[in-house]
Length: 102
Image (cartoon, rainbow, N blue to C red; front, side):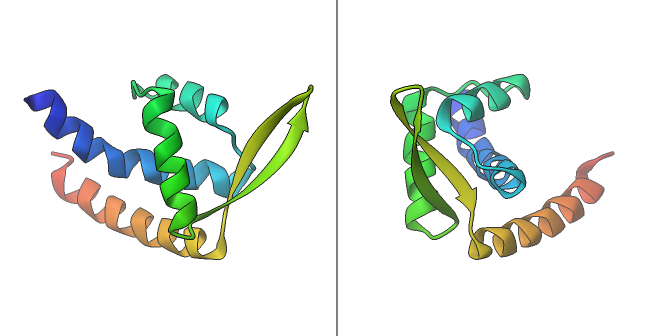
């Protein structure tokens, strides 16, 4: 039960993490899975890709297909809307962190 609750809570953190990196440079799924794993998030491709598609649908990410060694790879970049949402999320996360850190 706790794992399910934490998973729902961490979904927002994962989306913020995705936006952060997609603002720095184009990202792709496998790279993002590895990045999230480094930060302790254990999610599968079957969880990540719907998140990326949803964020694209919501206008937070734009997607471009590129040929990478004969394979079509989808690269995601933060949109202007995504940048605005990330900035607001950063402010809210910082305020929350200050409140709960002790």
